[in-house]
Amino acid sequence: MTPSGRYLTTTTLIVALGGFLMGFDVSVVSGIIRFIEAEFGLGPLQVGWVVSSLSLTATLGMLASGPLSDRLGRRPVLQIAGVLFAVSAIASAVAPGYVTLVIARMIGGFGVGAALIVAPMYIAEMAPPASRGRYVSFNQLNIVVGISAAFFSNYLILTLGESGAAWAEALRLGEWNWRWMLGIETLPAIAYLFALALVPESPRWLAMRGRDEEATEVLRRVAGADAGNVLREVKAGIAAEAALGQASWRVLLHPSLRLVMTIGIVVGILQQITGINAVFFYAPMIFEQSGIGTNAAFMQAALVGLVNLAFTVVAMALIDRFGRRPLLGFGLSGIAACMLLLAWAFVGADNNPRLILFAILGFVASFAVSLGPVMWVLFSELFPNRVRGVAISFVGLVNSATAFLVTLVFPLQLEVLGNSLTFLIYGLFALAGLVFVMRILPETKGRSLEELEAALVRT
Ligand code: BGC
Image (cartoon, helix red, strand yellow):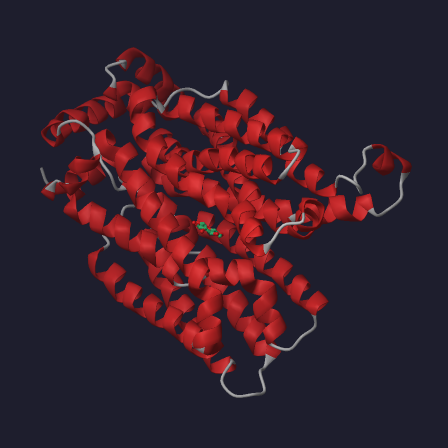
C-alpha cells in the first residue's frame, strides 16, 4: 500500500468507529429489557421508552449535525458525538432509576444521529474517486459489526455473570449484568475520542472556508502530487455553487438540486421500505413462526448477522469496480425474488422452515451487497460541497423516519395481513424501486465529487 493509501485507511478506520458505536448503541438495548423490567418494575410503555427514546434523539442529532458540520467542521462534530457516546454509556451504567436511564440513552441518541451521517460524509470528502465507494462502505461494515458485537457482548456478560468465577463475582457481572452491558461501550467511545485527535479536518470543508493552505496539506497526504489539481477542482466547484447561496434547509428546494434530492429521498426510503429492519430485529420471531424451536431461532438470527457482514465485505470489493448501479440492480432483484419466495413459503398451513431460512438469508445478502452500503455511498457523494451537510441531514432523516414507521407497523401488519402478504408488499416495493433506480440513477463511480456536481447539479 502507498503511504497515502495507508494514511487514508488509518483515518477511515478511526472515523468509521463512529459507525461501530452507532450499531452497538442501537442493538445493545435488546439484551437488557428483561432485567430492567424486573429491577424497576416497568410496564410495556416504559420499556418502549427505554428502547425507542434513542431513535427520537438520534433524529434530532441527525438534523442538527449536518448544518453544524458545515459551520464548525466535520471533525468537531464527530468529537462531540464521541463525548456523547461516552457520557451516555457511563450514565446508563450507573443510572439509579428508570427516568435517568431514559435520559442517559437519549444523550447517546444524539451521538448516533451525528455519527450516522457525518462519518460517511467525512470519508467521502477525504477519499480519491477511484476507491471512494470502498472507503465509505467501511462505515456500513462497522455499523454491521457494531450490531453483532453488541449481541455478542451481551451474551458474554450474561454467561460470565452466571459462571460463578471469582473475578466475575468481584466485578458483579451477575448482579449488575445490564449495567455492564450498557457501560462496556465507554471503552470504544473513549478510544474513538482520543483517536479522532489524530485525524485531520476534511480538506473540502477547509477549502470551503478559504483555508487553502491547510486543505493542501491534507490533500498532499491523501492525494500526493495531485493535491494542487484536486484543490483547484474543489475551489472551482465551490465558486460554481455560489448561485445556491447560503446553505439552509430552503436551499434543498433549489431547482438545480431536484435530481440529486429525488435520488437521495427515493433511495433513503427504498433502503427501509423493503423490510431490512423488520427482518433484522424481528428475525427470531419470524423464525419461530416458521415452526422451529426458540433456541434454533436465536441461532438463525445470529446467522443473519453473519451473512450481513460477509456480503457487506463483498460489496466493498465490488463497488468501485462494477459501480453503484449494477450493485443496486442486482441487489434489488435479489431482494424482490427473496421476498416473493418468502411470501410463497408462508402460504398454507405447513410452513417450510428451510425455505424460509433460505429466503431470509438471501434477502439479507442481497441487501448487504446493495442498498445497505450503496445508500450511504450515494448520500455522501451526490450533493455539492456547499450543501452536503444540510442535504445529508435531510435524506438521513427521511431514511430514519421510514425505518421507524416500518418497524412500528410490522407486528401489526403480521397480525392483520399475515406473513405472506406482508412479505409480498416488501417484494413489490423492491420491484418498483428497481424500475425507478434503473431509470434515473446515473453511475457515480470513479468520478470526483466536483465532476459529479457538474454532471448532476444544474445551476
Ligand atoms: C441501515 C440500517 C440497518 C443496517 C443493517 C444500515 O445501512 O441504515 O437501518 O439496520 O444497515 O445492516
